[in-house]
Length: 105
Image (cartoon, rainbow, N blue to C red; front, side, top):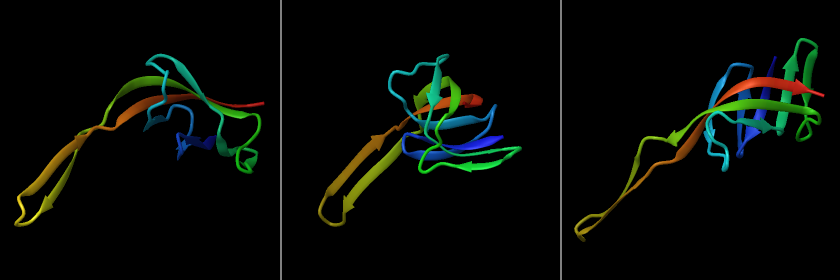
């Protein structure tokens, strides 16, 4: 059984035991459980259920494993022959979650 779930505006295909790296959810810490209720599609042995836009009574439960920052991305601006150079860096925060169960009502 697997599901397509929307987390922070991005869609992920998940099944039990899958590890997903996604955008940071404020207030969630490692070891806590998080519930994703924006399930777009569910496939099990009986068939496929498609939500319009989301499925009612279906939720995905995950456990937060880690919170961190991705590698640094450098943004460089340059104008030739003008002496203009700017260099900025950015590290995007992320969260790693292990999917525990996919529950149906």
